[in-house]
Amino acid sequence: MRSVQINLLMWLLLGSLGLNAQLAPDSELYKTVLAHDLKYFKAYNECDLKTQANMYHEDLEFYHDMGGLSTNKDELIKSIESNICGKVTRELVKEDLEIHEIPGYGAVEIGFHKFHNKQEPDALSKPSRFITIWKKEQNKWFMSRIISLHNN
Image (tube, rainbow, N blue to C red; front, side, top):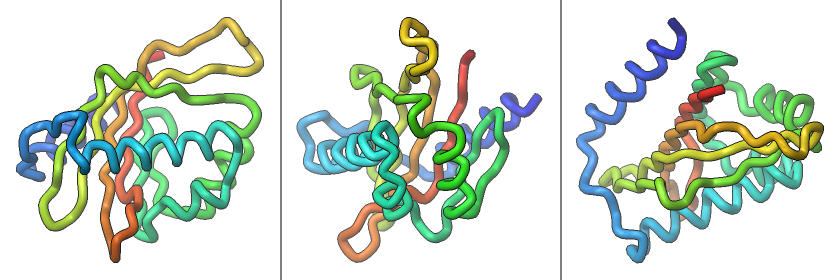
């Protein structure tokens, strides 16, 4: 049931944004958002908690179909440190990535990613959908809303 609620939230959110057409991969905004995604997940994969925390907006909302809603940056970082660091890495599925501009706010990134479990080196998750709302404030980009849906 929770997955249905998250899917509904995702589509309501996207519909209410009035998104522009998907950006071309050679556009500056596409490259900018992709670079921030790769920076964040490099920090995620390497357990660089400071970089991760600095990329979260103070008004963060992280929706996870298995873990629920997180709105506290410090608690989220502690959870990543306990459950992710040294155990899991993430790989972006670049060919399925969509980035849309949100005029006056930033951008939305929609795509799939896979996770590698370091305790089971041959195990690779099925691609999981994610949506990240990136907010641009004073020429800095922050992750403000994240929806993570796991297909395993």
